[in-house]
Image (tube, rainbow, N blue to C red; front, side, top):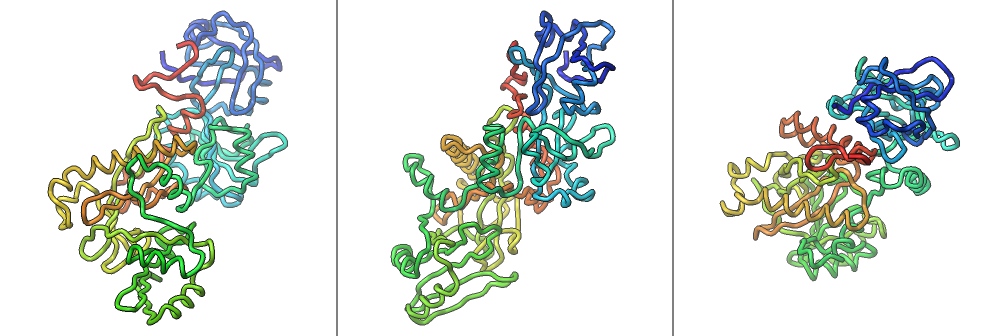
Length: 456
């Protein structure tokens, strides 16, 4: 029997749950007279009333219960029974904006891509903004997807059972949502490049190669690492898209600073250490930048190459590599980012490109990157981070060694799939987020495909 139900309202103010006896037995509540109903953070007692007049695919609740649960009647729900609690769901919240006024009609239209797989997802998907969170009553004003009208319907809803966020949050809000949702609030803690380096430096036995990284304090820090490595990058701690990155090298007594600005490769040459010191003092703020060992990555037609490995957790809470996409910077550019002039290609196209790697290395590169990506994600799990989607930037040096360059954990942009003309992958990356959220909402899936329930 399918686990999909429509929940309808019946007249009356009493707390009645009316259900077909066959359905009650399937759900494991055939002998119950009272049960706890839960939708999001709201839990209410209900008196169980069995009736063969109710279709097996329906559950009927009194108007009082429907109102107090803030339960939309146009949705398809799954039911999970744990002990004496009937969980109605999944109910997934998506915190997408700070201000409700930015949840415009056009924005909500774009959000429909997340629910393309609603027939497999079911339940409530509510888009909301931070300024419509009612802390006092634990309610949110938001927009719930209606699979009948195929639109988002405005309403007042409980706090969700699980939540994904795509915006930055203050410590107050992070701690607040964690206190309410716990582990069901994923992508709950963004981390920066320096934190990543420190964490993985504590795992030397993993064998994961990461460029040596330190905080920029003074120009002397840069000079010290130049003496050690010959070439370094200076990067913003919180930078995105390759913006603000500068490569520094010392050649024949000249300090060369290469960077990219407004789509143009630029270079500044300083003739002395004093000039370079003054240059860095003006350009880089104490504690806002990192100094990182420069790795000699492979190049294609004069552009540096790295690989974006897109990782997501599925409904079984397992990490899955959804795609590996190569990125090649413009000729002479120090970065490979697509938003900064780079080009994308599928890793399967490696054989067609003239790169300084052996045929055997190219043949096994896909598997090597996938294996490394899984190892990295599992370490993050061990560290206590609840990430549901990650973009790992993996570099390959001229000797064929793999390096972890960066981890994008701030709602990594799936549009790289469009850069390789793979709209199906783009949709899968958008919809895939919600299946991990469905798991966290109490509807996870064991590997044989069944849902975990208390009585199964």
